[in-house]
Image (cartoon, rainbow, N blue to C red; front, top):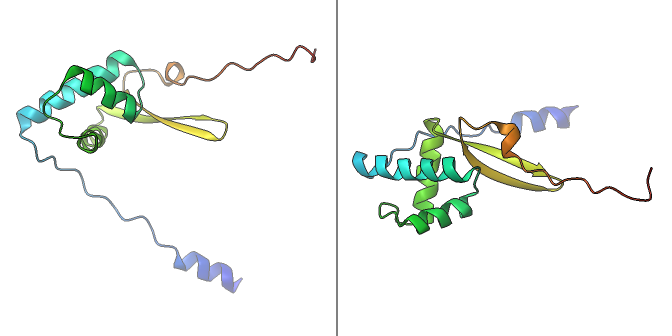
Length: 120
């Protein structure tokens, strides 16, 4: 019982993260967020890598790197322009970004179970 109490009081809570403040000018931020939002809206739920590929195809000049895009997407999540969903299949997880207006039942792509011909 003493060990349980020690474990309970030794745990630290997760530190609160302050809101993100983007360093880009507001006009450039608006352009970047509009392009990312349109890409996610048009092409459905996307991972970070898929989103980065689409942004490179568009040729957006405001983003300097993939890390910068991830920061902007986190900023968009804070302002509820995007949301993050988890597609959990078996032992693997896949985190997908989607808009707030898409239904979660349509966004999760579950593999169809294989029917076993030996079982009735």
